[in-house]
Image (cartoon, rainbow, N blue to C red; front, side, top):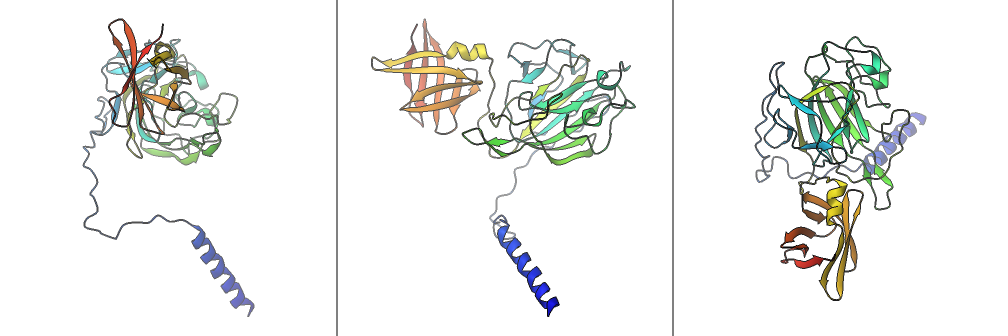
Length: 347
C-alpha cells in the first residue's frame, strides 16, 4: 500500500511539474506550407596565414581594410593602426569601440598576442573583448605556458568564470573566439528582468556553456547590474600590449530591426536645442546617455541613431531627421508615414 501511494505521489508530482512547464507551440509537423529558412553563404574559415570570409548576413566590422567602423570610446577617431591586414592596438591609445550597437548576437573575433612574448601573468598579451560598451569582458591574454589567476586567463569571463579548459595557442598564432551573446534585459524602472548570458568557443573548443553573468566584470569588483539599453557597441581593450585583431564580424539574432549607432556626445550636442514648429509650438531636444530625447504630442520619446543625422523611437514609429538648409538648422519630426513636420532651431 505504501509503495502504491509513493508511486501515485511521484506520478502526481511529475504531472504537476509538466503542467507548470510552458513548452512552445509549434506548427503542424512537417507542414509543407511552413516557410523554408533563408539561404546564407556561410563564408570561408580562416587559415593561419589568411583571414576567412564572414557569412553573407553578417555585419563585417573589420576585414583587413580600414578602421572606419571603429572609434575611440568618446567617439573620436581611434589611434589604433592597420598593419599587414590586422588591426593593432597602439599601447596607451585607449580602448576602441564599434560605431554600431548590438544586442543578442553571434560574434566572431580573431586575435594574436605578441611574438616574442613580453612580461608575465596579466602583463603578457593582455586585451579584452567587451559587450555592453565596456561592461562585460571576455579576457584576451597570452595564456600559453603563462600562469595567472584562473578568472583572468584567456577566454575567461573576467573576474567571474574561468574557461572550462585552456585552449590557447602559442604567441603570434591566430586564435578565434566564437561567441553567442544574450544581452541583459531591464524594465522601464531599471530593474533587472533577465541577466546576460554567454556561450564561447575558443579555437573551436567550448569553454563557456550559456553561463549567466552576475553583473559588470570589473577588475576588483563584481557587478551589480546597472540598467542600460539592450543594444550597445562592442569594444576592444588597450591594456598596454600590441595585440592584433582580424576578421571581426557579428550576426544579429532575434527580430530584425533598424541598425543602431552610438554617436559621440559632441555630435549629439550639435543636435540638442530648441526647435520652433510655429509661434505656439517649440520642441526641446536634449541629450541623455547616448540618446536624444524630445517631447512630441505630450509624450517623451527616447530616440536612437539609425544614421549620423536620423533618429527613431522604439515605442512608437516616431522619427526625427536633422538637416542644414541654407543658414538654418532644421529638424523634421514624423509619425508613421506622414511627411514630417519642419521645425527651425532657435539661436
